[in-house]
Image (cartoon, rainbow, N blue to C red):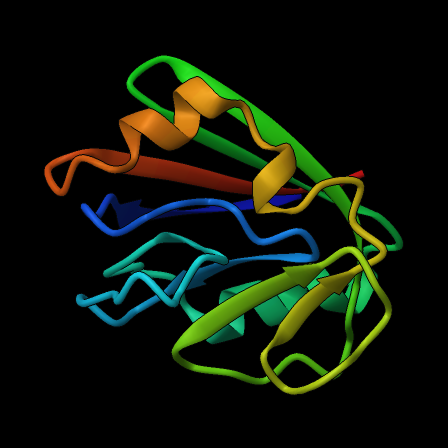
Amino acid sequence: MSYSFLAWGHKNITGTHRRTLEFTKDSELSLRGNCIIGVSANFDLNELKKLLKNGKTLKAEIKADGIYDTVVFEPNKEFNDEREIVIRKGDFISERTFGIKADKACIDLKRDLIEKIRNPNQKIEVKIIML
């Protein structure tokens, strides 16, 4: 079982956060948002919740213009945020937390991927897969 959604790049994406990564439905991003790697995301909360019910381990495939990276994590069954998806290396849980105990955060993603998604016209494809 899997679910895919789209997000877009932004000139202020830095991808330097050491503990988290995030996709947001917001279209604007300040330089302080160093964990955000996609804006204007079109994910559906109810579709994401379906994955959380049954999955013990999830993988996010993040692709932009032929460059991709993956993040493996445990689902947070309490996730319930309409605007943001946060994946964390640690085990802190809030309604915004989609995944915990991730094998990567922003800083660990391929730098050529981060470079691509700094372009505001760059489409980002995200596929969440139940393992």
